[in-house]
Image (cartoon, rainbow, N blue to C red; front, top):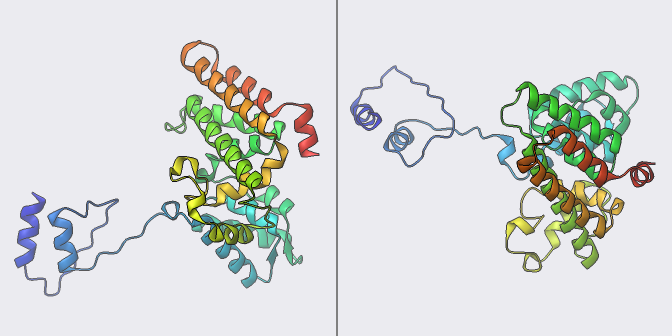
Length: 283
């Protein structure tokens, strides 16, 4: 049917007429799409989440907007703001406006300001548990886990599941392990901010990194790797390996044991983060 419509449009007289079509993820191989490209103008408005450099763009935009308001943003506050907002420029503009109003006459927006005022946006919530556990913050980890379980059990977000939380933590600890190894070999050094980290990444000989993207933490968006780099000193290599073992066991229990999912996940988080070590890490 679309092919027939495309044939008709090729011979149709468009004098004084305009047609506006909006669609998500069109198939560029189709005759209808190719006809539209020839007859009119096709524009793409892709999601910022599809851009591997979204964190860099978001950081630059946040700094630009705050400077326009006569404010500066501390380095650690920039990273926290990007983490909480996620790849969403509209949400960023809203949060920047709130921060400007909140700080009043102060010229610098601090990390504490961002933590108090900026909530986790929907696109950033998926990383919240991994970031809390990666930071060895037991209180925050259990709170975020409880929030995630509430969303799952109330059906608020059908895409989330208990097993998905485990897979997300596995990805986080695999990243921590890989970044710790890169630090050990000297390929990556501590970075004071995200820009300094990106400069390091750009200078690395890619032949020294794994060809398989699953084992190359710098193959995609480097921002998660930057976050992990800030966290690896809180973990020994043995602790990271142990965390993977705990998550594997939690995976098995969720699938085969019939135990309450909340209990399985809470035990796993507490065993991974610990109590005494967690207190020392966050002190």
